[in-house]
Structures are given as structure tokens and as C-alpha cells.
Length: 448
Image 1 (cartoon, rainbow, N blue to C red):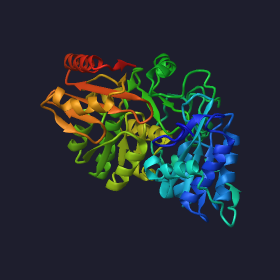
Image 2: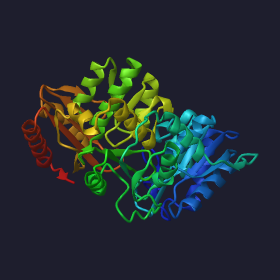
Image 3: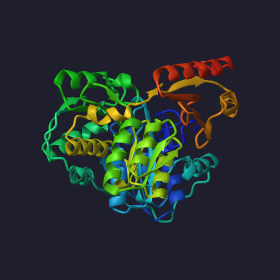
Image 4: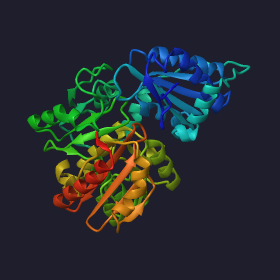
């Protein structure tokens, strides 16, 4: 069991702590947590171990009294769609997202696609397995099958209000986005330059993690050489995405959050927009200009979704490439994000690069990671070491000054301390990055 229960999901190398027996126990424990007699949907990606892991999980869930609807192959957002559209009590996706093929895992949600992470119940699932406190139900749950591919595609088509013909490239990274993309394009009468649409979870071309901008080089080349409108890359389970604009430049997720928020607020006239602590201060500035309420949130999809739902806000964005929509049960979808951007380009009649230029007004450092055993001590020292800033402690520390700010937080998934700095200009940013590096490295941290 060691290490497979994460903050947001369960994930590990398949065949080690996560195996067929553990899959069964997770299914049984999740059924005990959720309650016998309830109904969940369960989908999977196309990893070599996904069939076996899904079968084991379903077996355990049914022994615990859950009725299971097997969705077969799908993207993670398709499980959210199934959950809220057919009013299930939960949904589970068998996936390890962008992790290498030897990994697998499970993502959970409850009614209305509300995430179930460690803080929302996975801790109880883990404890029950560790203590051997697992109970079979008197009546075994039922098993049925339903494919939600067509329903999800129809939902996406309804959201596609653009009327123009686009020239775009799509990099599915050999992940589950490739399972949907051609069918979606056929439905809306579009075509795209195809990069790695075949499903291959050995990821022979590059890791399906567009947050690593090195994985976007092929997409950038396709856009610039083809003179395309934009490119979009999906992660392994198609809940996250990143864009390349018509100039071939990567669009940072906080800049895209700003663009989408501006357009949504123009339609709604107001509402809460959620963004994470690593985001540019331009996000809040534009939200306020548009009559919205900017709300800074801790990093992590379960936290972002919960806060957006609480505020009943129309939209939220996270630096990792998650974008959340009230119209999608406050959940994230790479395809819905792509469609939203297409709608905006069509409505505004301007290229993507021109639409985002006003938001590229500050100088970001990007994320810088440090290995340290003293993360808590550094976080406690930060405000004294760099006095005069406005302190926020919603996730680690964020300190805002007149012409710069920085965020320092512990990773939720790795033993790292993560730093982001933004300055009003490049010189200020570089100066502050150097000062913070000197402090951390001088205190024993190592740059990762």
C-alpha cells in the first residue's frame, strides 16, 4: 500500500503495491465508504493493466453492494459526464493520466461529479484496507454496460457555437484524447493536423504531460510550419490541456484563464472566478475589470472544484492546465476548454496571439523546484526573510509586493518545495529569483 494513496487519487506502478488483489480491496473498501445499494460508473484508459485493474475493482465494488455501470474505454471527463447526466452516486476512472505505461491508478468522484480525494474520503478507504476492516454486502451489486462516448460528444457539440472553419493541430500524446478527437471533429465539420492520436500508453513520442513545455515542440512546429490558427495538446486522460498560439508560442495556463474569464464574465456580468496561488496578478486585475470576483485558491483539482462549487462561480483555471466549468458540474474537460477557446476566437475575430497579448504584461519565472527536508521551516521564515509583502497562506505562502510577488509551497505529489516569482519587468523578476534561490540553497535546499 505504501505510497499509492495520493492527495487526489490512487496511483502507483502496477504489479507492485497496486495490483489485482489491491484493486479488489479498493473496490470493496470504496463500496463500504459509499454505501451498499448505490450505483457508480466505471471507465478505463488503454494501459496494458487497465482491463485487469478495472475487473478487480468492479469485483470488489460489487461484493460491497455497489451496482456498477461499466463504461469501457473513455476519458476522465467522460466519467464526470456520465456521473452527472445519469445521476449516479459516483464514478471511478482507471487511469494514471500522463504517468509512464507501467503505472496505473484510480480517480474517484461522488454525486454530481464532486471529487473524492484524500480529504474527502480516500483516507477512510485507505485506513479500512490497512486495518482489514472490509465488509461484503448481503446482496452483491449488479453489473451493466453503457457507452457514454456518443452522449459526451453530443454535449460537446452543443457547446460548439463557433461558425468558422479552423486550421488547427491537436496533439493527443497517444493518450485517451485520441479516442475522441476524430469523432468530435466529424460531428462539427472540422479537420485538424493529427499528432499522436493512436492509443499507446508506452508514450513512444513524448510524455502526455503538456505542463512540461518540452513535450509541445512538435505541436509548435506543426503550427508555425502550417500557418495554423492554434494547436492544443491533451494530457493522458484528457482532463488537462495546453495551447500553442498562431505564432507558435505556448500560452501559459494563467493567461488562458484570464482570456476565458474575461469572455465568460462579459456574458454573465459577474460571478466568482477561481484561480490558483501560482497565477499572474493579471488574472485578478482582469476579473475585477470585468465585474467578477477573483478568488485565489490552493493548488489541486479537488480544492479548486470545491471552492468553485461553493461560490457557484462560472469558471476557474489552474496553472497545471485544468479548467473548470459550472456548465460541466464544476469539473474539468480538455475538450470543453478547446471548444471554449474556439468559440472566443470565432466571436472576437482575432488570432489567439492578439487576444492574449494584453495579458502578457508581467514577467513570470515559471516553476522552480527545490529538494529539501526543511520545507516547513522555509515556509515559516519566508515573510520575515522578505518583509513588507501582503501575506496569503491558503497554500504555502504567497507574498505580494508593489512590483513583484512570489509563491512558495510544498508539492502535493512529490517531496519538493515549489517556487514561482513574477515581476513587473524581467529585471525585477530575475533579481528576486536570485535572492530567493540564495536563501533556499544557503539553507540547504537543492535545485531539482
